[in-house]
Amino acid sequence: MSMLPAPRSFGAWVLAARPATLAVAVASVLVGAAVASAVGTVRLLPLVLALFGAILIQIGTNFANDVFDHEKGADTAERIGPTRAVSAGLLTARDVRFGMVFAFGLATVIGAYLISLSGWQIAVIGVVSIASGIAYTGGPYPLGYNGLGDVFVFLFFGIIGVAGTAFVAHGSVPAAAWLSGIPVGALATNVLVVNNVRDHVGDVKAGKRTLVVRFGRTFGVAEYLVMLLLAAVSIIFLAVTGLASPLVAIALIPLSFGLRLFRTIRSETDGPTLNRCLVSSAKLMLAVTVFLAVGLALGPRVS
Image 1 (tube, one colour):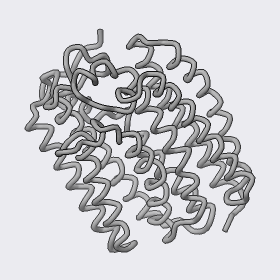
Image 2: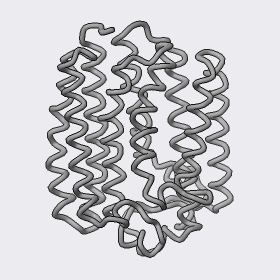
Image 3: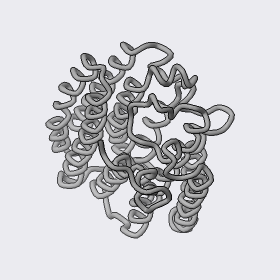
Image 4: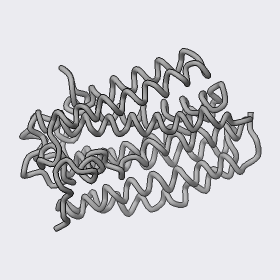
């Protein structure tokens, strides 16, 4: 059994920030930057600021998830996922609320500067992103508790994340950005799908009505496969239509390993195995993202 950090230590804050999830935020920025480089000049300072802003919003969302899930009774001793800081007594709910406000506050400061560089559209993206990060598990109608978590992840960590980054880095949103966000969002959604399949028994008790709770484990397994296929089709469409370089098809190489993970989520039900499947799904998303970004950036310039 792994040793937990001391209460209220730096390690406790790192655990609450969930560094393994930050790749989801980085992925959309990476692909958005690659799209911008494929169609023209990249503005480096706004891109770097967008990266830090996305990471801070992800951390703030993780803090919100930690404290609100605890208060709603979703993080109990029966939970089989990774340790959560508030429920484990490593940080108080007040601590994590302060961390949430601090992370979102820094993101707002960065966003204000990006608005001065790129326009009011960034304000809309920033406000909606922060509000959705809080509303994912907090507020009167938490998205994650009402079957909307999958939509949230697909949009904000996929299409909106990629398109928003391309806008900040390039000054406009090329058609390739909208389509490139689909595989990123689909594979980010699959990370959540594994989480929801693993936790569906506890979620039922906590009143957390994810899509897996609403429609059953078989639905979650099917959703995982559909997201893999959606990612593949969108990459192929990018490659063959001229919206991006044909080189983007190299992203299909790591994506093929998703079928192995699909077989795991379909046949295995024990927590440790699904925890490993979740980590592998996150690694798959990152690998596909890197290959996709390389294909976009190194291929011939597109309009």
